[in-house]
Image (cartoon, rainbow, N blue to C red; front, side, top):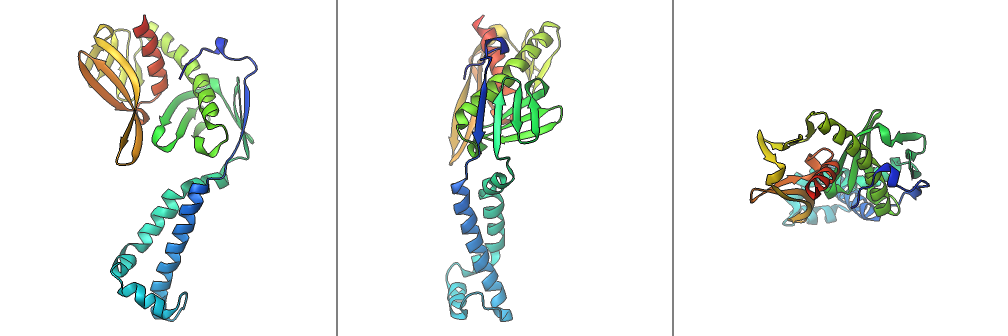
Length: 251
């Protein structure tokens, strides 16, 4: 990712994106409904409500997984419908179109100006970007929009370039800047009360991690021969910190 200052951005930047139906969530939604129907049939069968043939219900309950169906059926339904199929509900409530230009982001009647954004948080595991601005918080689900990569790059470049200028001014004025678990100062980075001076920092990078099917991204800082890893989602304004440190270490 290349971060550019506003003066270097395209003057006529304007991209429109339409929302994309999440077919993967539809599969989970239908599976959740099917499980809920079977669970309801098993619970209502003793009351004489025949949602499914009585013999079929008896066969299911006598099977090896019958007890687990009664015990865990409802929690599994809530998990599948409320978590795995959540993108479907987000799609239903999402605006029809989203436009990004050099002034801000517009989604139907909602308008966010880049200069009003105070924090950007990358949630790589959920393919989401969170923007906290003076009017509230926007959770941008990238996988719900067309040309998601261009959308991500445009939003990140616009926000980071402006926040980076503020950080430079604060550091030059001798004011510490908090980035979640890290604090930036003119002398270096502070983590858990320990100062990592600029001369001690060898490299900084973003690194993708996959653990038991869970994908995440970490900010990796190597200082004094020791590697420190930070979950990108927990480092507020992580792209801004990365851009600042990259410029500082490059001299």
